[in-house]
Image (cartoon, rainbow, N blue to C red; front, side, top):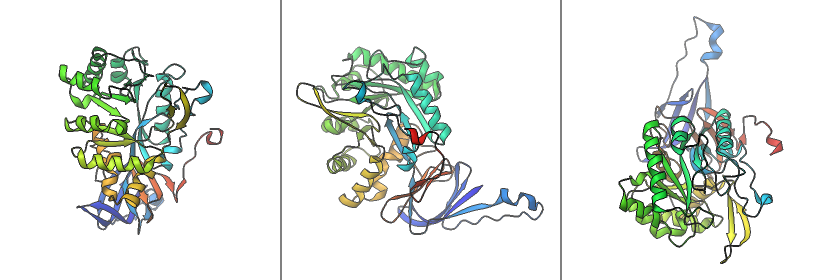
Length: 390
């Protein structure tokens, strides 16, 4: 059944315009001032139900592209304080309720009790549920844990795997050398080219002394493109991050419990970095340990997927940012970063029907993933196996 979202505000032609959106299957078929669908079932009245179009009233509401969260611990993260501190896995319902329709799963500190096999399986489950999901091989450790025994083979032969994860400037990492990172980046880039994937090296960046120095060293000594390297958690190494962006690289900020500070930092980066190179992710279900000066853990928190929309909403309502600017790091910019910008990140004809409808207070009202209504009135509309057990 096709769907028409009527009288909803869409940002197009540099303004918010009341529009109709026609969804056919998983795609946006038409965005226009007024969409009419003529149905002629006179020759076959028994097929009338197949030809009906569901009309959805969007009057007074705004519609934006579904969010893309490129840093999610879908198996859970943590464990830095022993087994009892392992964060539970992501619930299937968490992404749609948070407006997230595309995500990338990954491992963190723990590539031992959690595996790339488990990661790929969970990614497949998210896809079956109706979301667009990818994952990264590797973890904080080097050499990287893999599914096939090779980072390159993982990227080339496993559909869901689009790159590799590693940690730098962090006491929990493997303290890899410039040569190690060069080899890993070379494998990721070439395998990405062969598979038609982004082939990224997604870099957890900790609070270590050297910040992004190892990346700058590789770029200075080799011909590996800067687009291969994707540092995240850059909010605490802001100057290095802006330097990296001005060289042409993507920089990823992480939602923080101190929302005011993080939102102001992202807005500052949007003004100082070249257009399109700032992204934002949640670190959902990953651990956020609190360390003292001796690197002893004195507390632990966990990322939440809901923080993505909360941060966007805060930027608009508390910092005076326009909605169309605030969403770019989680829609258009990250879609381009992941080589998905031919089908994700915009509301346009031919793009995937990943859509979030917001009410007049910018609360999430409806969510569509690949044309399927997942949330309505802020409540989940699809069944979730074992939701009450996790």
